[in-house]
Image (cartoon, rainbow, N blue to C red; front, side):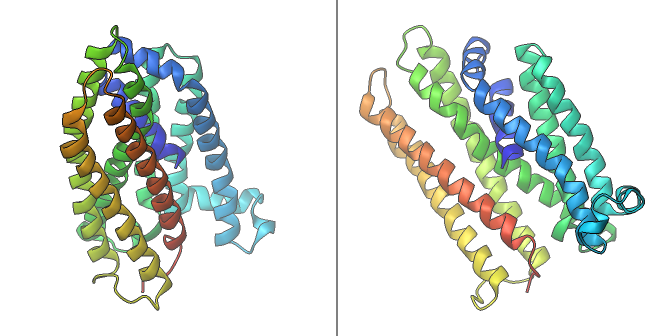
Length: 279
């Protein structure tokens, strides 16, 4: 969740938000950014000994240097962790970077760490070209989902800036760009999600006696709810938005907060059924 938020928020700020407004929003989000960054680094460090304990003979192997070395250099989990470790170092380095470089480096490092996740879990079920296609699709799913979920966070202070005469124009441009890019992100999330389900499960998740399928089906319902809210926001509420139109701005803000909560629930579900047998 920390990586998805960092990738989406700072890719949006670096690429689509006008410079002065992006600088202001980056400063406003600094505490949240540092908290997510620390969480991402700490959990990355913890992941290797935990994975080693799961692969080996339990907690005794978690800090066994021989076993750690074997997992790190001889398994796909270890190879993925090497990439994530490099990304974590880059994330830590952003603490001392200038603001503009910080935005770009934060997005790049978080995106790299997300891509590394495709070398673990269900994405490595197959080998050859089909396995490569599965990992590529999984990476697109993570990046597009993070772009959607993460960009909702800086959207909140940008909405507040919309009523400020000094930043109204920049905020309006940032909102329009968010809307345009959001169409692509949502379309990619849906398309890659359907393909991912086909590759992993091979059918629609309709058997609720299976824990994997039940959790996956709940995820689908939550994502469709987020899509419905995004469409409501874009085609019903946003056209009514004007300077000092408090009601429209509040509705957009409330929808964005609801989408963030639903997105967090989706990520929680994925973290649970991603460890289950896809049956």
